[in-house]
Image (cartoon, rainbow, N blue to C red):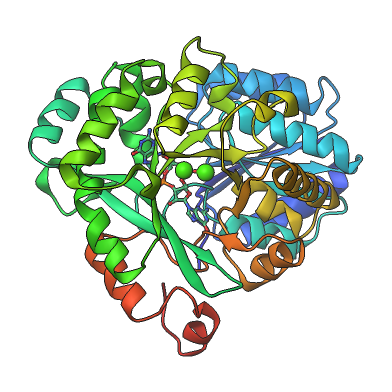
Length: 408
Ligand code: C2E
Ligand code: CA
Ligand code: CA
């Protein structure tokens, strides 16, 4: 299998491992590998030339450190992925990764020097976080006109991904994830192509309501195959500033005869920190109205524990980056353990997001996390495929399914 990337930039000032890196990268059928020793030269090159798909970045360069480089990268509008190469302390590495992620970069992982071929192969064969393998990497961004006409023409559709309780082997919920049927074609776009655009263009409220109607229509069918399962919907913080949101949602639920307790509203942690005036009030009122509130991508922002204590969240979703790093990185494990403790104290359920392998599943389970979501159990699927998979019991026995040779 060839790598997902065709161009790689290696930013390294230690010539020995720089050579080893280049040899190993070229062995992955990558068309072009550039090696640069200075951060400033790299930034200049990014300003002048097409961007590589991934940058391997040493945390200690002659002219700057990794944190500075990541900030510069954000300014150049770099839209590729990152891998950090270092011999420094794990905690520094975690800080840099977290900074990069909070700036919106997809960090594939990190490599400890001396670099080995296996580490490179593993990272280059990975897919970017938060992107469904079936979808093209989204560089498309829909225009206002496209979003408005698309909504009228039913371009927007929900996919569903199960939340599985690995102890009882039951599907306890589904997360709805928005998809877009591109210009009536077979091509399905991921949210990256239209959610940020809708947010920027002031169309996100309309899109969310429109999407929610689709989801509410599906709730009955989903709960028929998984009784009592909750159905989660993602809300942008922009939508949560509307004070009449709870009443509006209750009216809609009424129309579809869905109880608010069946609906989970997921809100991204890092966006909450922006402290929009009405958000906490609206969240509290949604809670009072009976909706379940879930804090998404937990760990990627900087929630103060004190703030969390005062918000009515009943569920905490541990970000995929911790699940992914936990296998090799003890500080990621420490974050998971302390989040689990915090959740317990605050009476919140914890869900591990983005569980992709049996190894990740076992590790999360050993740390006390019992509800999980991720490609290991299933990719997000259309309503029909989701229902068929639940009926065939596919989600709860993924290991045996793998042995049969079937794929999610
Ligand atoms: P999210 O809420 O964190 O959703 C989880 C994302 O991780 C989904 O990406 C899902 O397909 C992906 N995922 C699930 N399991 C795995 C796994 O094992 N490995 C990896 N690498 N990824 C996995 P998707 O569907 O592309 O959605 C991306 C983001 O777009 C969502 O992140 C959410 O923030 C946003 N989004 C999706 N639907 C909506 C929506 O209706 N409204 C709003 N406001 N945002 C939405
Ligand atoms: Ca979510
Ligand atoms: Ca998430």
